[in-house]
Length: 196
Image (tube, rainbow, N blue to C red; front, top):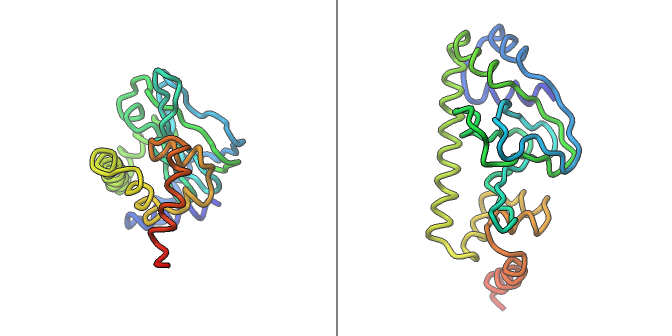
């Protein structure tokens, strides 16, 4: 599974074999059980994870006890509570495996050490931050300007894996709608796409 991580890094930056070996020496493998929590509210995010199998979820819990999912990371994606990882402040978010998962992680200390010793890692980090910024901004815009049906359509177009692999509860949490609303959307979407 290490090959996935190597391939991902090489898809983002040009890098020597020597630097790849050096970078990989700071990553550790980890197997996770479904529903295992990697980070809870109030902890400082000290690791970033690369998913080789399974799915991680980043979410908040509001004062009513309802959770709202910010991000799902499937195979070949990174995940961390990024604000806390950057600032070392207590996290407002939770990080959880929603399937039995296999990941590689790197600690905050080692991640920033690599920035000092591998020049191309800084470029990798810039690309990582750009991807995170675009993803989060698109999500925010969808909440501000789209209704529930438009958000669901966009999800099916851009990230159908979420709908295919995860429960309705998880999908509803990601769209920031109730499960009842999601259930009403599905037949509406089908009838809109059916000309008869």
